[in-house]
Length: 371
Image (tube, rainbow, N blue to C red; front, side, top):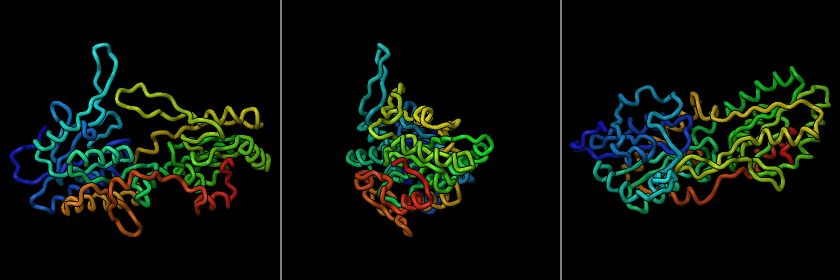
């Protein structure tokens, strides 16, 4: 740890948790630059979410304007991130090699006090916000910043990183069209979206796909096959399907495997594109190929929109700290950046409304949703 403890300034600690997301560095930069305008405050950064505070020795760094100079257009996060462990489920390996977890939240509180941290800004998705809510009950002054490419937090109109992910997925659809047309093939693009199909549906509309399969609408394989048969016998000879990783057929289950990583309890999704390919093989007289876009959707340069939104979120987070408005999460309610209680933010998941204008637009241009 390189931070001097003799500083007379008040300290806020910033951390990034969960999966990485385009725009994280823009948030960190905005937090530091806004806080630097307050002479009695300074900013610390914890490496890999709260792990940096809980490790021995601690991995906590001082963040000043020099440290964040020019990072706003960079993907990833300079503070690193993790979706494993955490203060309530810290992984511990037993002598026999098995893994258990322990609650270190009380120790986290004490370590933050020793660091002189008066406020924490937690940047993360639904899982990180749930941890933030529990830490608030432990007495930690905490502010949340929503981050997820899945756009699955209902208390904000949109999350930064989502538009960048959609741009990447749409670019993939555009590229698949040319190779599909050249070979008269069916191309199946699997995109992220564990429980919400925002990326898949948006990319399908933007890219002009023929079928979009999302978690909110279980698909009937016979109807999917019929749509593709009609499409590929219509003279152009190719078709594009966009499928969210969490999509399921009617009566089916998500395609996943159990994680073997210590401290990671979520199932690892992936492979539903290959399942769909197998389901269509006997129903469709066409050659099919599968592309799993995976973590490409998380990487790279954030769009200008996401940089702007992330910057607004970072500035608002510091202002919430200055106001002492703890237990709240930054939220975008067009056209305003506001805040909502973290408890409210995690109470309801942001699913795609199957009767929404976006779904109606997809159906209106002939995209099949498999139902």
